[in-house]
Length: 167
Image (cartoon, rainbow, N blue to C red):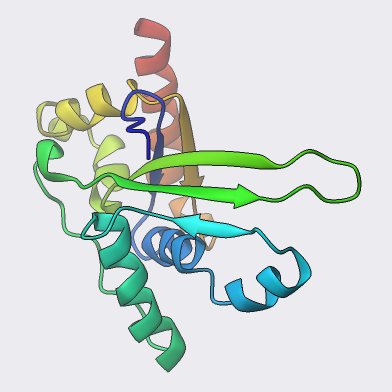
């Protein structure tokens, strides 16, 4: 499996917005068996012993029981794991088969929250540097809370926009 660390996705968003749950569900794919029946050749693969396998195993234990994932810890940016996996989709209805390589980093919700706070700029700078190396971002916000509009969401997005323009 390829290592796509320079072509990866950053998963960002507020605390408890479902970032890790979404990623774990994607890697684990609880309906994988049913999909394989309808689309033989469909697979989700990851290296044995990888962070992706660890997350898939956690997903099986947690999602099947209907529990929730614990929040992602705010780790040093160099210790945020890469979840690398590959989705193979077989040819369907005259569409060719497709293989998609994923390399995803799941940022703690505190990072998104701290983007809105000017006094946290030095603390979040390494995360912003890492964020702007990624080809793509996925921003997740579960509840658009009116009180958070100006206090957090708008300010965090403005900060990201300014940083992006300056780079």
